[in-house]
Length: 147
Length: 73
Image (cartoon, rainbow over all chains, first blue to last red; front, side, top):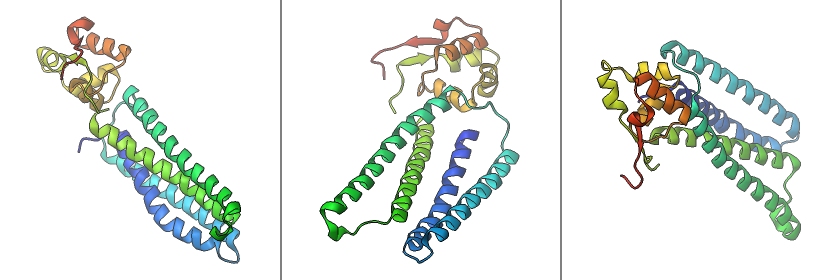
């Protein structure tokens, strides 16, 4: 595949986020229910950020070493970014709307169970992660179709 | 994504200019080679500024490089 450095970077970020998320979110949901929930969640979050940064550094060092030098971000890259961010914005808005709806629904239907503050925090983080994944997938898709 | 209605003769003009490579054109214009590929395949309409730069690099007036073909394709 003929990829720009921006596309390679996007693939790396997507890979990093997916790898970290697959580990992080099940652990985070588990931590919410544990006795030392907030401290475990803080620890997990710090570990997650460090893991993501390390994965990205290693990936970009490898990419820089094996790829030829090329022009930085051009107008097409910026346009693709904007279109992808617009899509990600819709996804983020939709999930946040669902979270707000879920919290409000608790008052009308107590049988749903009131989510803890920590659980809401995990949901919001999951919403941010999902919108970022959608953005990265959209960027890759737009590059593949030409625009 | 639908193909653009802004058509071009970039490929023909590159070959007329001593088989200029897409990479060389990209370097002269200041975009990535993949952007030149997308423009050449008429999948992406460049900004007016980039269009002028491409025409300048190919040594042709703008309308000899790009033309508008509404309804084509």
